[in-house]
Image (tube, rainbow, N blue to C red; front, side, top):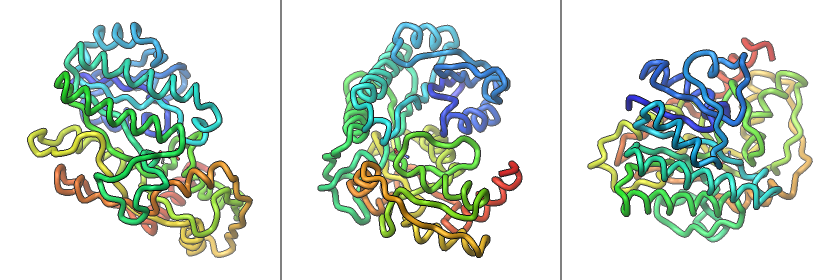
Length: 316
Ligand code: AKB
């Protein structure tokens, strides 16, 4: 990868991925884009940055041509809870942005990455150790977008030879940029509230298991998959990846080891609970391990130690 154009680069994944890739590939070679340009943001200050609304196909094409992009990392998207509240907007941004980015990749012969999600599964999918290849009939707009996106990316690979690759991310947990509008966000909020007030009211019910991953492992997964030897890839869009699966009581118990007075209670949000219940309890990442050496460093225990330490350093 030499000239990498990133959409949605101020979001939860983008803000950290851009900085990591600038460290690896050189600041000038990672072109960050987003719909707004906050001048004081480290991503804006540390290398090339352009304003881009991903529904503007022409501007995306112009920017990719201007910087001679050979790789596109397309991250701009609405998450599951927001997509459920605004389904038409979600379709337009998630699918419109994706097809625009794939068209640019096709025209300029770029490698292509976009994340799918555990949201690409639905209530009829096997819930435990969900296989790589299985039933995908999601009941959320986000899930419909993710399955359609996986199919579209595979189509651009088979039909036009675009080197498309993707992973199905679980909930991502990070101390840098908070997520917005997701179902798994509780697993980030709980750390902030543990430090701020010593208690957390969860909108996800006790006993609801979902897959999760710490951001450093997620960033490595993207880079490792993009660097992987294409001849080894039997799958493309998209690989199951996961680091842990837990329910709210388990993350609370882990936090209590460090903040013994920490308390969790519940005020369940029926929309996000419904979305969570339609997703797997835990997914199987064997294909990613076998085809490109996917690995993780952080489990719940190690992640909790790091999250609390890093948030304290930030003054939370
Ligand atoms: C969400 O909750 O919407 C995301 C996801 C699992 O894709 N974090």
